[in-house]
Image 1: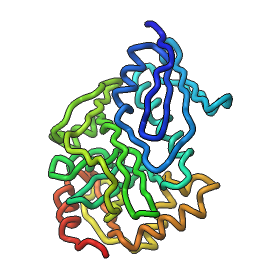
Image 2: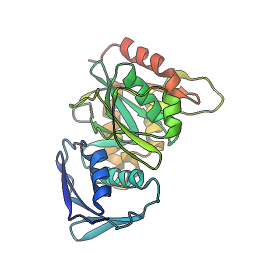
Image 3: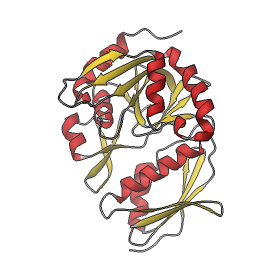
Length: 278
């Protein structure tokens, strides 16, 4: 495979340059090319992929940030995850949490949970039922404006995710690698929306999906237990202030159960019935 000269991606206010095998760079562009960083100007990231796509190095200026080994199958997801994680470390104003997000009637809902808890399948089901897509795997929030910011990286649909979600929302497959389909829904939100709800997935096996209301204090503690801006020592204080500022305007739910996607209609109903804040 031929190795390309660095290809520059303008991702909103973030510049990413990638060099590597042409087919690999094309696949990477397909999954990250619609990402738009709004309200931040992260430093330019340069990624060098090895000719066999088994390793990658990320550099800012003259400083090497990371080198990661990539699996023979699933390298695209690993590289995408490393790139998104790098973006999260660059943030100085926006808050992040490991989760997905949708817009329901113009109001933002963030879905938070551990890997395998069912975030992607629930997000896919919510979009299929009428929500607009904001993000998968990384949710960005703007505490100054009380909004959820779109990220628009495609849904990473693994075989078990597809089984849990059932029919995917209308959209298109932009890439497929290592058993993962990267699915971009047609219904996407292009602008920030007011933060309205936080849904925490517990993924408890053997339980039918059920929801309960969380207190704001409980939600703040739950956020601190998940990968988020709290995870970076230099951001703990402003993460606490920012999330505490956002929470009074949101409803907070915990969803227990082994297949949260089966609870999508109920979650959607709760979000639509709740009156807007303010």
